[in-house]
Image 1 (cartoon, rainbow, N blue to C red):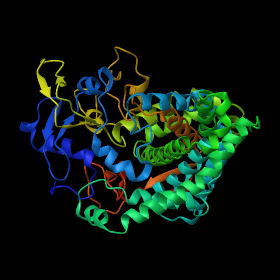
Image 2: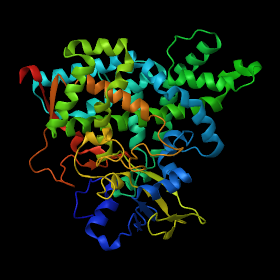
Image 3: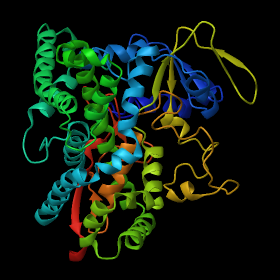
Image 4: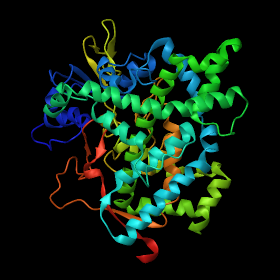
Length: 483
């Protein structure tokens, strides 16, 4: 790895090994032992073999994941729950993440997107170069705040106690055995800081959760079906009606509700902001795709950009009639997925290569579903290195038609990402309200390192598990009516 930039994200590593040492790669997978940096790993980048341990059989998450998230959620979250506990809570939250419910929240989301658009216009006026990801993160966390609790966090315009504390807590998560991470982990003040951060977050969230409980019990619903309100309703419906007034004292529910909100805040803003930054990057470097996208917005929303917001607010379902925009998002996530899944190998579980029939043991290994690898593999994706949103519109039998099991940024199977529809609808709305009015140009230094032909390669930032764009995606914006 010394051949490559030191900040390159860990999900690149198996693919870089396969590229530099093809003799080590068995088709579709690679055994890697980098102890003590990480557990022994079985990196899998054959789509059908990935399906074997995520879809055909859903193996449990690897314990290393729990070690990373324990300081944040105490593992009371959908990402780390397992068995019947996970099944129960997934069922409670599923209705809140339905397309129908998400579309009902679009008018609230648009208020946060308005702020983002104004900030981009302000940056265009000043001509400054800035980190696009930072503004995208503030926007997406404001949106997820509306989706979960129907509150305005105002992270885009001022410092918010919840966001700042969450950032501090995430920075204390132990995500690797790198020297700086070891120093952080051994700091005697770390346990106190984690406890205090969790205390602040709990005190911030608890009144909002209690408000939702009281509104439901007293029939005072605001009509906004937020993630918290629907989950509270589902939870209460499962309780003995004679005991529902005791919900305030149910600390178990409060613990889980707060843990779930933490993970939704973390995953709901982090990965979506990254996908947004990379969407702008890939559109700027592929002018024909950008022109097609703008033409679709003209056709569906009308050529007058000033009326697009009002149309979406009045009829949010318009966001489901933007197939090329959806294709742009999917193609972006194909080339820059946030991270792959990690599962725990089992003594009696073997992976079987679909072509050769050869079986591979998994016991003692962390199974790494390498979405970054499978989604860039020439054998599964025609013209794999090219940004081609058209592949998502190709029909079966056509050269670019997407192969089964090959697209996995949200994973597949029962443990897929519950928030994938929220992320994609949110991204469609933001793109629809920005790409026609402005050109967003990446501005990387001339001497920036390049990985797989990209200066905007994904990096591992302190306290982060997912891949983030190099330098936070520095950009300059120009309004199109000025160009």
